[in-house]
Amino acid sequence: MAKYGSEVFSQYDTGRQFEKKNAPAAKTIAEARREVEVIRETDVIVVGGGPGGIAAAVSAARAGAGTILIERYGHLGGMSTGGLVNIIPNLGSIYGEQLIGGFCQELIDRLSARGAADFPDKQYWGKSETSVVDKYIKANMMHFYVRKNQKGEYVTLYTAVIDPEVAKDEMNAMVFESGSELLLHTWVTEPIMEGNTVKGVIVESKSGRQALLGKVVIDCSGDGDLLPKTGTETTDYMLPGSRIAQFGWVYWLCNVDLEKYDRFMTSEPEKYKSVTDTIAGEGGSAYFSRGLLEHQEGVVWVHRLIGSLHQTDIEEMTFIDTTTRKESVRNWELLKKYMPGFEKSFIMLSSPQLGTSGGRRIIGEYYLTEKDMDSDVPFEDTIAIFADNDRGDLSLKYPRTYIPYRSLIPKGTEGLLVACRAFSSDHEFQEFFNLIPHCMCFGQAAGIAAAIAVKDGVNVRDADYAKIRSELLKNGAILP
Image 1 (cartoon, rainbow, N blue to C red):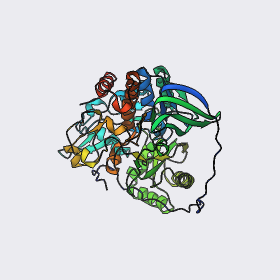
Image 2 (cartoon, helix red, strand yellow):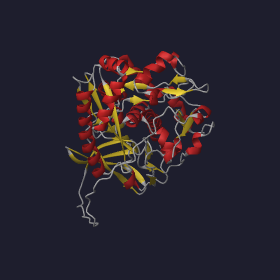
Image 3 (tube, helix red, strand yellow):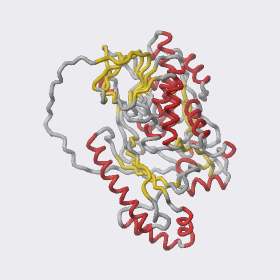
Image 4 (cartoon, helix red, strand yellow):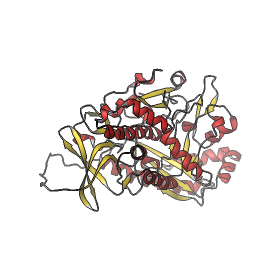
């Protein structure tokens, strides 16, 4: 099991039991052969418009490739918007060094210009400024913002939060400005294969069953949705009770009088404890995080985590969604009934997209493991550096973790890159490095590599790394 530092929440749920209703006997039907209309032929097809997919599509198009981005929902952003996981953590190390830039930083800058992002000022990154540290501890956001340095002092990390609704609009703008085409409300159902080479994808939508052909396909679905039918070797090993073995279900409450809440909590601590115990005794929880966006006063965030080892099982997903929604509404009712400050609150948003933390992963040309976190040596094909902040003393010793391009390339499958949490890695590595900013880094590198491969007429596994590196640096990525 992964070893976390003391400032990092790590008491994760181990899962729930429910009755599965799948028919016990194996039974199949034969589908009829049919002709499927090809609606697009392009250079690069990006599957999934989450953080990795947006970065991949924008980067491929900017590098000169004809690109189309396909997304199943009616908006972009994936978990960062539809999942209400609007926290973009670990952009810099405990020592205050920024390590993730590029597309991710560009998005934050654009949102910040619209008043839709919040993060600590650069002068406080890696510093023990008490007022700044206290702000994030008070907000119940230590997990994302506060660590201990070598002196044992609490310091502030470079982490950002974004407004998910403004982000949806800004992400649309970035895709269209890049020249990439976008198809929303479109579900990619399977790859088009020629031997072991991916040649395109089949999609289903209100327009029916259709096909798109491309020279390179980038799977940014998060769950590696294309992988089973490509023949790519994968693993989905997860430990019960780990971070990646969790569903996330998030909702926001607004119209909370936090001044009244704070007065009650500080002036009547015994009564406050009694109220929290009463709420817990009736099956709820008084725990929440304070919204950090300046224009959203009186908004609090509740992040539910529910253990699951089968995060692509529709029966389990249905069970989690329905039971957790019922529990969450009940929880709000208890806060409204008992907790001063919540009397006029209401549920402002609940995530339409159930949060998936882990699952299917490729066995790639390079397989990242726990030992790669304990190294100061960059790979010869490094495409990103991640801040290692969550492992206590080990993070102080090894504050940087390097990602090779080869971890995006599946073994034995041509014409395909994977730029999401399905990248090539073991459970321990995934536990720390499959978050939103990491996927943006994967996507930016994959999009650039795909465009270079198409331009040079080579397979993506043979794309010129020197050109990939040059293009990444030109677009603001931070590399060794």
